[in-house]
Amino acid sequence: MERSEEAKIPEFRSLIAAIREEAGPLKDVILSKAEEDEENKILSDFDNAVQIQVFGTLEHLKAYQLNGWRELVDGEDDGGNGPNAAKA
Image 1 (cartoon, one colour):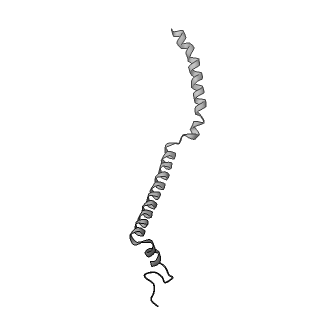
Image 2: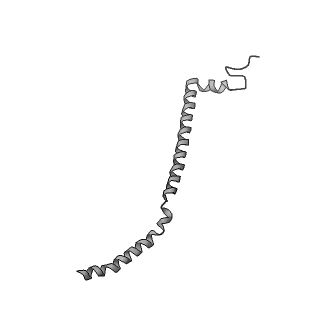
Image 3: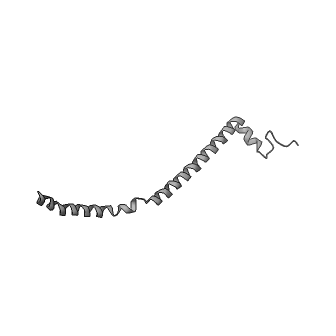
């Protein structure tokens, strides 16, 4: 029984060597903890910026809906055809 176990040792060592050889290129793919944290911070900051933009856009759309498109556009119009046009 001991002999068969000893015969498996070289096979085991060759398997370990093959695993190490194939795992080498994975070091370039797998991020370190610091790299992962940095990437998560970038994604979180981007997500926050997008959420702020979405909120602002929805607030503007709500204002347009409440005040009406024409009134908002014409109210800011310098052409004199809006409700706040200067009286001549």
